[in-house]
Image 1 (tube, helix red, strand yellow):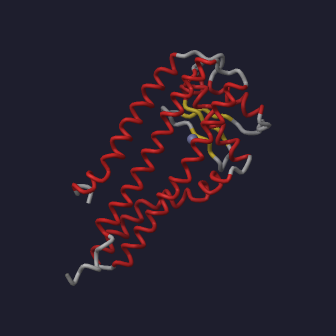
Image 2 (cartoon, helix red, strand yellow):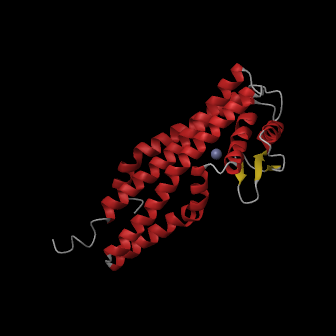
Image 3 (cartoon, helix red, strand yellow):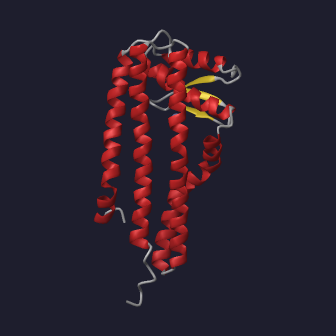
Length: 229
Ligand SMILES: [Zn+2]
């Protein structure tokens, strides 16, 4: 089904947006890496966590690039080597974003609660829905096809609820870094550049999922009901 021209036609706006966002992330990240900060990403994360009363949340270094994340199960902020060790606006910006997720978790920020609840569905959903769609199409069972479409709708809903979580974490990061004097006026602009670019990658991914859902409905939704034409 992935060689279907309709798929590429429908998804091309999302794919172009994703490519542009990826390029923006790389460009703004390079720029913000050149912009010095008074401390490393790990130190900034520790400072903000302590300020928020979250002294018990550890910060760990993980391999890879842009592998930074907050793990809600173990309540740990994990930062990639560059972010952990570098004294740059890119490092403190990304570190502060992950700390933003830790603070959301501590405050039971509602969209994060919904998001964490839906994580398993978002992981199995894409493959499960394709299996249901193909199975339904091969067996001529419209009900199976529609279950597949609904499952994929769940994936889209997960990504939609993830957007405010990401935007809020970045807003918290910008606020903390400026208010606590970790970045100056120029540094704040560099941080904003990286975090806004990263936000666009989430928007692109969500658009891609929504358009894939539309594709499934157009391509598979009418199957079975048309069989007597
Ligand atoms: Zn995030």
